Length: 196
Image 1 (cartoon, rainbow, N blue to C red):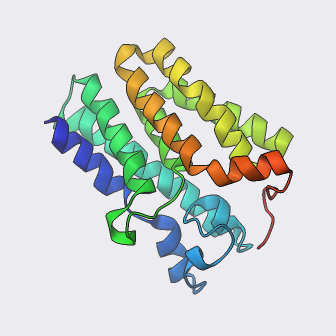
Image 2: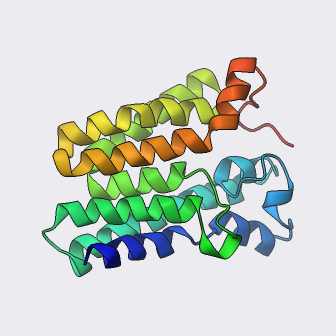
Image 3: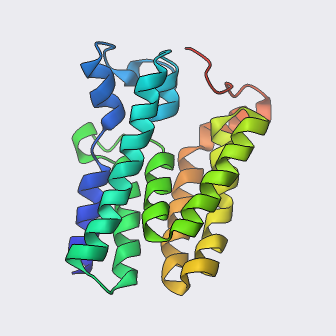
């Protein structure tokens, strides 16, 4: 059952909405511009705010779907498996099978799984991200601050079952932001909305 929950999360998380939407819009391969990322921040660099918003919402929605399918269908009453599906969805977004295991950074999908798994945690992480983004004008910095807080928030609101998966998600997001961290330290990280 644990494997099925993880795989359900993985395959939902592996749907590359940023790539699909930009191709459908006639913008080509989003991996060829900006940071090369398939996520909403890089889609925003095309100047298409609507596409960026759709990417953000759909990447979050696949995380929500993974958690809710486990909660209400695959393993109701087993919160540890719900969190395993959450982790699977983020891993699927970051390492999608269809793109040679080269995906996005996992932020929107991670927000989605947190909102679905324990909504107070998801809301607080979203608020922290939003405040940090407004103040710092750097999407990467906002994500790092928000997800640094997420394991403590998850443990406080959802208990021990949530701690290891949210620590793993936070660690994965920090690892995927290694280049961003280097640019933040150098003062060269692009501001939100910068076109490439």
